[in-house]
Length: 536
Figure 1 (cartoon, one colour):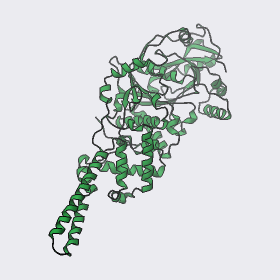
Figure 2 (cartoon, one colour; figure 1 turned 90 degrees about the vertical axis):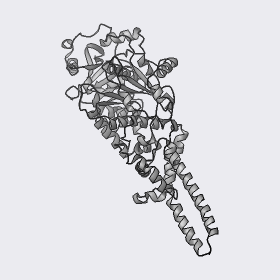
Figure 3 (tube, one colour; figure 1 turned 180 degrees about the horizontal axis):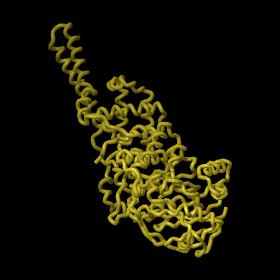
């Protein structure tokens, strides 16, 4: 496969009126009067036409989108290009950095012959520029400010997905969360969850769920084994406090540019279920906390969800429904979501139907499965004069087929596009530079040090010890009473009374008094079962 013919820097007409008729018709679909992001220039008959810019209206970025294409076709650079322009327009951006090469967005780019040539081809006035950025890492694994969530706020639906539970087990986990919420047992980390599960299948705890169906020992065993396996993968680092406030993602820099939040993920690439589900938690938490704002002149945040297929692999019907509803409804809260993956078929149809903006990089057709995926991708585009099967297999690196929503909400004509070059560094910054940026962040002191305060595990352990001590003390009192009392007939009645005393001071009774009154109400949960309680 070869790239379309490279024109000389001066090739192409200077305005739409000078374009060939077909190219002019396509270009007119991108001539928006309002503010827009510049993606690149139209490719037509093997030529790049700098007088035919391909753009996306700033106000349509909350209508969601898809960036797709085979490995090595330039998806990461497209994310960087769009993120830079969003930041320049005062819009905060979230980027999931799978390969660790997006940290360069904070540093000015390096010009060179290829960059100058690309800029001339697409009519870009290129200059080197870095953008304000914060760097995060899940649970502090890798370089970045640690991002943690409590088990309580993560919720049963997302946790079931990451533990790979079936529908019945997911329902049982929901029951466990319901019990913990109602009784004021905060599930901060995984040992808290383990403690509550173990209590609910103990002799003391079993009666507490009888009225709502109970928890079978077999299901509890599966959940506990799944938690153990999860912990052995290092997942304990991701659950705890201080919990990350997703409102940090909405910040702007003092100069008015949007802060680019880069979540560094190379350290957890071997835990795909975890990081994809964790990204969904970030999005669900934003949805739960943000107010309705309707359509704005520009989004409050644009969220790029990399390796999106991992989110949907093996997902339950309930989980997919929750994803679909969240994506559909979060638009009215001013948040745009772009899914990044290899082919559109990686995204369920109900979700794909909500993605109004499309940047499709080249696809390969080396195998029958590739050919099938190519045909499926073509069917997802509006009608166009292009032979899209041919175009999508002949695009070069940094080229894509684009269609977006116009300012009126109508799809623009499909446009083969040569994309602009990012102005920030197209590659990672050095480790020492990244470490310095993290250490100097105002957020680092807030989140760097993990905190292990009293929660469900400590409370249940304390109550268990108190119950055991109470039973031991009661037994001793019984022995002393038996020695003082005369007559064999009185001893059984005394023992029975003491047994009742022991039961009256048992684990759950004490727990309900000491813990149930502390929070006083059940936690309200959102679509994904994430907690609605504000953390600050």
